Amino acid sequence: MSFKKIVLAILSIAILFLISCGERQNLRYFKGAIATVHPLATETGMDILARGGNAIDCAVAVGFTLAVVYPQAGNIGGGGFAIIYINDSSYVTTLDFREKAPIFAKQDMYLDTAGNIIENASLLGHMAVAVPGTVAGLLEMYRRFGTLPLEDLIDPAIKLADSGFAVYEILEQELEASRDQLAQFETTRAIFFKNGEPLRKGERLVQTDLAETLKRIRKYGRSGFYGGRTAALFEASSLEAGGIITQTDLREYMPVWRAPIVFDFHNLRVFSMGPPSSGGILLAQIFNMMEDFDLSSGDPYNPLFVHLFTAACKRAYADRAEYLGDIDFVDIPVQELISQGYARNRIADFDPTQATPSNMIDAGHAWRESESTTHFSIVDQYGNAVGITYTINASFGAKVIVDSLGFFLNNEMDDFVAKPGEPNLYGLVGGEANKIEPQKRPLSSMSPTLVFRGDSLLMVTGSPGGSKIITTVALSILRYFQFDMSLAHAVNQPKYHHQHLPDILYYEIGALEKSEASKLEEMGYTLKEISAYGNLNVVARKSPEKRWEAESDRRRRGKAATVY
Ligand code: GLY
Image (cartoon, rainbow, N blue to C red; front, side, top):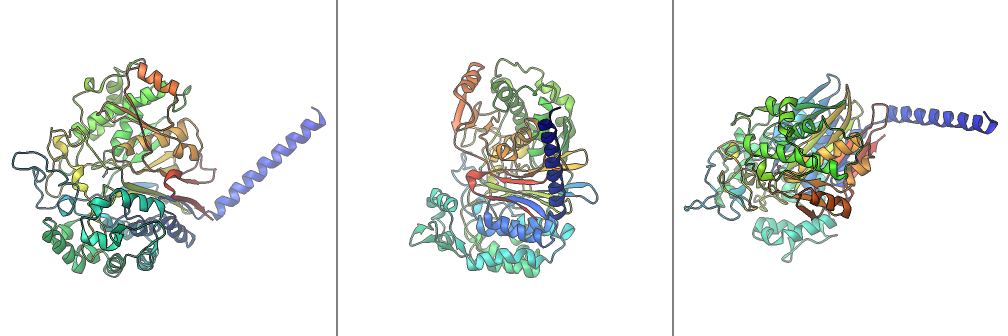
């Protein structure tokens, strides 16, 4: 070996040694990693992590902060799901704080006397509202696993609501997009409009009523929202506007701890949300159907991979409509649906050269969901993790602010099937399993998800996107682990989606080259290019020795950070 080669070899070993010392040093001072949709929420979370708070403390603080700074989806007037990993006991659990239909809800409440769907009834104003679960969910997580004083976790949100913050570009755009509907409600105009116009970028958004509501939660805990003044004002506001939510609905609302859906994909173990979310079951089905195929040669944009992924999605989404709803009301064959044997049978008729039209894959169903939801991911220095996806359904939910309470109400009732078997506004149909019943939870696609290899947690992932959430989450896992992309690429590269019906393969601008699109069209696909959807907020590491990284979809200008 020449002298030059020996010097180079010694230098390489020295560099590798220094990198590994750096990694160890970093791991020693690591306080946590976080990705959320808004810089102010991420900074609140970073502060909690830096002070030694655990992932649950951090998630509670972020959840309340987003209710202030991201009113289009962050909320106390909606609901969601949390997936939680407790490192000490190697325990994964999920918390269902999905909204519930009010006690007075009826299966036909959105139909006129002729049995037709009443336009916007399940979308706009008090009739569209399901009983909110977010406050109960955040407080229940805190009760079980929190460590810092609760006041410390709510105070940052109260301060931001009281002192206000500058309206940012995305908020301006979303207010503008919903201006006509928002303007219908005086309570909403009073906060989000100035001189008859939605607030503009740079103007200050102060939310005094919301701050007062948060102060009551800080002082009285659960009953600061589900009882007392808040519940009384909520009921009065609802009944006056023709809604049906009463104080009894609020008092009786309880979140539920549920076992996660668990499945293996090659050497990964994935934990995700079970019913009333469809996310975990569909992820299991999609991954199980792909497991026996050779994916080693492809990249995620290779038409052959897109074809296989789509075939798996079509079958899984067809099952969604047939079988899935609130597990407290409907018998769901969960173990069968997520079994490898079932997946093999389901994909047995896959033709690698041709798309199978959706009408030949069962009489499947799907239904319209809004894409306005938000997800955040957190790991802490103790090895715990939390992923939360929560929502008020549409952007700004039902568009109505509760009088004197300062928060937007959800329109989650629209996630039920208003008329079983009949096409909805998008020409889609849904099944009996998701019909409206009192105190039932509407079926969701929200999929906060954890990925492990062996005992080691490697990823916390999740996204908004309505029915596209599930494929977005699936692609984040496949790109990062199966196709070994960087986290930045796994999160930010354009995506594609198929949900069985309509029989269209959607792809984000730039996702498919002309030649890839032509190849898929030759196989029988109908393609449709659409603008960006979803908003992944992910923390991940390639292996337990590596540093945690955090990434927030750059198109949505969130903030991802590691804390040391
Ligand atoms: N509202 C959207 C979802 O729950 O999937």
